[in-house]
Length: 114
Image 1 (cartoon, rainbow, N blue to C red):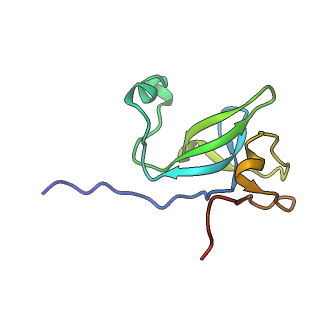
Image 2: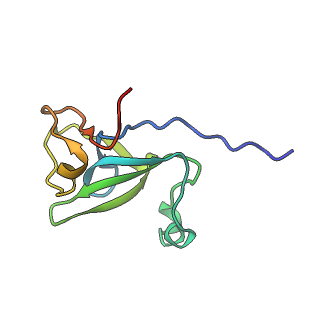
């Protein structure tokens, strides 16, 4: 019988603002993969000494740093909750999320609440 893969519950939620533990960027989560779901080529492009584990949640972010806005794919081990309370300037935030009160999570326009 094959061994079961352990899947942890995601620590962060869609609409939550997070920052990278090492690199200077922050972003809002718009999707979560329960385990690594990118290409092997992408994973191998990360230096081995900094390569994250595959068996953890990975987050899709509308990300930004001081220079630009982009989409990022980040392992849970490399994220921290953002404590700044500052809004994001990424242009797609307005397309996917409802404006938030200062410091609160963004509310996804693409999710229906039941």
